[in-house]
Image (cartoon, rainbow, N blue to C red; front, side, top):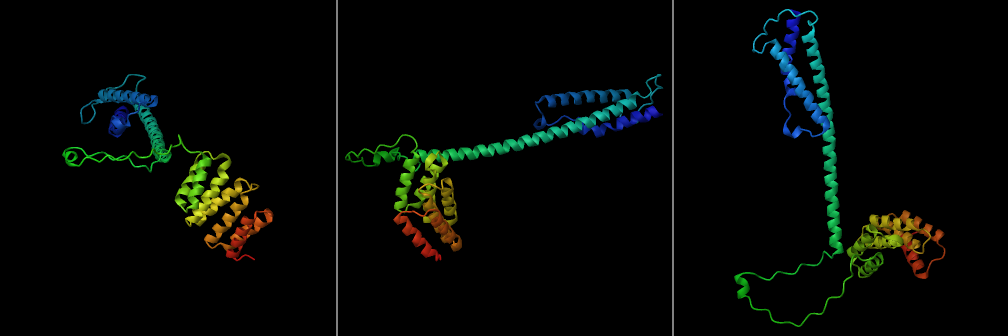
Length: 296
């Protein structure tokens, strides 16, 4: 009777094990060594369950009576069922672990694809700037019957040859000079673009000049907080350079732009205490800034 109950328990456990032992969908198949080993274990487990089903009677009703087992083999069906259940638990744990690893890999691939797409967009933008993306492509002449009806273009005098263009991207010195020229004609977006072009490349010793140009361009565009950051970066690059006082003056003017007069006066006091000998034009600009900020 005990043998028959143990075999019945093993047979009743088969429907519960069926979802685990069912073939995986094609999307969940894994080509790794762990996946192949797991599939082999599932196939071996399925063969063991088929052997139990054949030994205990495969008809859909109650299992057939089992003859009295021979000596030494009475506990075989129960031990086999326990082993199968233990192996099913191990396989379920392996499946959960491999699914977790697959989710982590999918998330990493998704982030990598987003980074690559962003990098591609940045490279396209920089290439357009280098190649002169503002130039328009030549218009295509009309085709078909409309071209035959259109009057023939009159010959014109040959146009003057275009000025020679520089090969490759412009240097940091050339970009800063162009930005200063744009700043002089109050073309602040062009001046800002030139400064950022230098800062994004390899500015070398011109990083302070590029930050000063960027701060002046942002002041002209009334982006006072961003201008303050640019002037502060210019000051921190080299506090002993001849242009460091200009950086502090620009920082004070940026503070005045968003009504931070106390900070502006503190910055002007710092400029006066650190740099006692400044040129006449710069000294006049400092005095005008103190007067606008109503410093004591």
